[in-house]
Image (cartoon, rainbow, N blue to C red; front, side, top):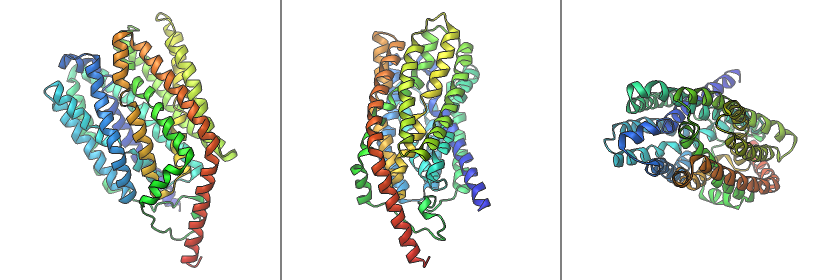
Length: 431
């Protein structure tokens, strides 16, 4: 048992590195926006189309990855995803023209939708009362990856050029593919559920279409999907355009941007873990706990972002303080949404369930960078960020209220199904 407990944390470390470096590669497009635009002589709308293309491909691939993860070995598929990440990033760096860059950047979206299998695999190493913290820890990789990309872009892009930066991150993807392939083992699906405690063997449960169709009969999942549709609009706008907003509308030099964004990203990263920790803690006390933490983060984030963006340009200290407060609370929903999806779905369809969640998120948010580009061209980037983020978060809060009302029934249904499954296993094995 002690060896297993150590090993599962080793898997978390490997997946953290995968997500950190993958997010660095994926989010580099933001800090490198200006030199890429200058290379190809394009405007904000054309550059927005670059990000939108990758998001659309990622959205299309979510159901494909979800189905594959629930049918086959998740660890090996994650190794394949890492190899695809490295390969497509190299192709993107080689692009000689804007059209080729647009197509190759879109191809990087193939591996961007590979996370459902990772979270599903982790759910079989950690039980329900620990998942929020672990998912929050893993999701630290997104803001830290952005910061890593920001530092790399600031330090290396000016001397090596943006293409060389992509060569470096692509090579790391191939290296991690080898690590995952040889070191990560596939756990039995559902082994960490509390009802399975004490069982010497856990049966093999595989994807079935009737179970996948049954996901859409869970009413709380409907509103989680709806929240996901609007909830990622702000993230895509912020990660893609905020660097340029500081540069062009707040007149920050590259060094000042780094000094502003680095602390904000570190605070943002802590918000994922704190949100997951709060969700786990409240979930132990009340069945709606996770969703209430997510709701609080969304509402508070909407208010704080509005106040932050309206700080006068000359008040850089106040802007920094408000930015840090906003960064702390806006990630609260992320680990709790994933954990809630797994609180109401059977282990053998969890990749599919989260893939549907992410598909809907990506399908809705794929247009966000392009929409922000249009608003910025007619008004300003600041107005684009405020309008899109505030509208999306307020709508998301409404959907989370409905989720909180409905989720107890679906959680109890899953616990009953797992108890029946555990009893069948005991009878089968004479326990």
